[in-house]
Image 1 (cartoon, rainbow, N blue to C red):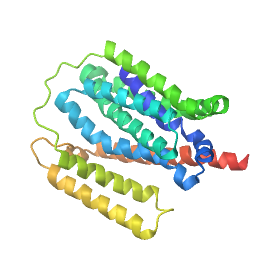
Image 2: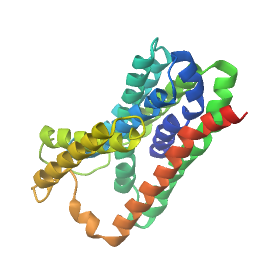
Image 3: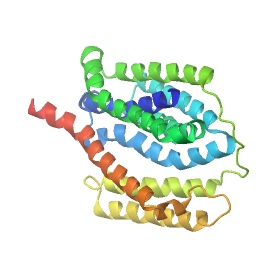
Image 4: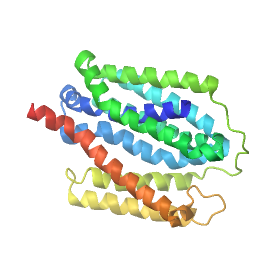
Length: 280
């Protein structure tokens, strides 16, 4: 239940801000191309955090990662509510993304370790329900809050949600009884994975506003970093990502389907508020 609540809050943090982007752009005096950093900042942070957060959970326990993620995300929302400039708002959104990435990495691992084998699928489905509930409730809730209280109230509301779940996790979420893995977090691979994913995501996200040379450069640099990560991580004793999983057709097709799903959903979440505001 607490793991699903964290997934709900993490996805809500992404979707609830989308409807406030026109208002944030007007407050900051920036256009659509720049205000998208309010969404892109946490997206990059989540992307860069997921792999190392999962590995850290294997080493020290996923409950610790989950609780720390809730605290970091809540702090990011708190600072975002008080941000006096657009740059600080983007940075605090990235901090929220780091915390959300930690929660997203830890929550399914916790459920998989705690749920009995015969009920594991249903438990993971419950966590996924929390994700999509947050994505569904975010836009109407964000629109209601911004219309009534202004866009900063959205960040105050998120702060309360994250810290309520943090208290619940601290008090009632046990650490699964399993031996933690031996090893260490290899920071070189963390940097390669984060830089590679960030470069590829930036190339796709900014291709309409950047010069072609910058777009191609970001994509090539990101691809090189990801290839270097694959070379270092593949076949090592304690990999950060088990590439053998992609040989499983069910797993690989599920990843592709999820990627296409979130790609379509993210575009709609970002663009629809501007389309509706211009149309109305």
